[in-house]
Image (cartoon, rainbow, N blue to C red; front, side):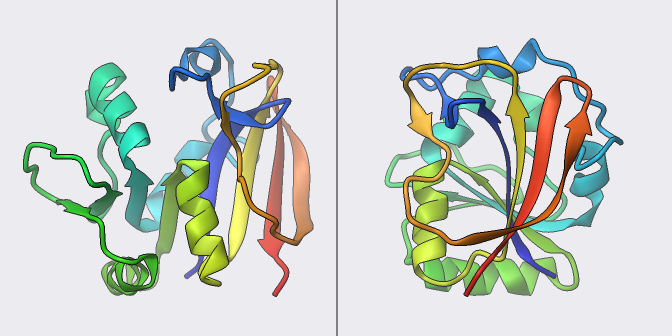
Length: 172
């Protein structure tokens, strides 16, 4: 079991445009079963956490995607409609992580984003790996991949169709 930040990024290091759009990503092609592909990762997830902007984008643009094996935690101060298998919280990341680990059991905890939320987990020493799929596009501005200083070790890298993919472990 590991706590993994699994995400996609523009080539210049942004997760989303300044208005939180991911449309740039949806026009790209990756093999879900390919190297570091989503379909290969997803079955090994036991619990998921994301920020309010990520969750809101999913609700607005891909409501069926706001699901995960196990429970989803949304770190937020906003009000969202109650939903089965979803927990909305503003608790400290250390407390939420303990709940995520208990839920995940022998599976991974997925930090789905955004970067600021992941930076909070990293600052608390709760981030184990980062898996990034770099898309062949630059955005020039937006939500950064990870707005924090985190030392990493490259574990795996390659290509998945249009994407350069990399798996890093956090150096403690």
